[in-house]
Image 1 (cartoon, helix red, strand yellow):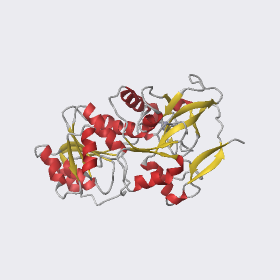
Image 2 (tube, protein in one colour; image 1 turned 120 degrees about the vertical axis):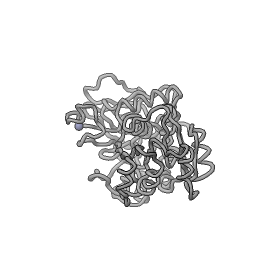
Image 3 (cartoon, rainbow, N blue to C red; image 1 turned 90 degrees about the horizontal axis):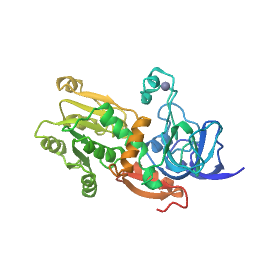
Image 4 (tube, helix red, strand yellow; image 1 turned 135 degrees about the vertical axis):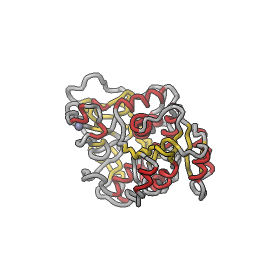
Length: 351
Ligand SMILES: [Zn+2]
């Protein structure tokens, strides 16, 4: 049996549970493609799943890794439109296709939805298997490492701001935690939408990077009056939209930045899943709280096209070899990054 190297864990726990081990190279079934992985980016999802199953059980041992760029290496029966040697990335949601939501195109709320790299093995390995219908051609102007830095964060930011929050030209948006992957895409997408962007982060170096991505104003959330600074930048009104990915640590302050009638769009809760919400502030100020869950295939395709044209830039903090996978998890857990941590899996991929 031919073997490959994979980063996996046999049980949930701290990052010392992750091991790089030889496992059998998987074989594609009918309708599936096998990808030789060149690069795979880390997401908070990799950390969350490793610590414990977030929403229902996951198979163990598990190879996580949702954001992949690579080359098709083998095809199962019945796959049309793709050939061995094609450079690809993929859409990571596998949906039922048959429920009322899938039929309406709202695949992000399919009750049956599963994620490649969470409910089935993902891309932190030399080879990975995906349904061929999830494949998308790799943008030709970008490297594998750049492409791997895009899918989840770009489609999630697009889904949150454009589709769910319906951000309009001329509106203002507050984006906390600018160094996060979705936030760094949100800054760029909000600018493309014609909005004024106010971001927050924690150090002068990260503030400079947020400005370089297009943020009009950046505040340092270590300063006690930063919420007032955000409101001052809107001439005292508050922002139209807040895009919160951080969770319990930032919800109360993100709500304070909103104007009356403002809307907060949320996806993610890694700083905590609940906090003490004062209900009157929602109805007195007539705020809307909008949930967003991932993104759609077409949103991903649109983001990749924008990136291929240079309008949306991959934001990469650093590139690590597969053997440094625990260090990658540490960087995310300690928020010691601005943008994506990408694992270069194939040895031929230049750093
Ligand atoms: Zn469905």
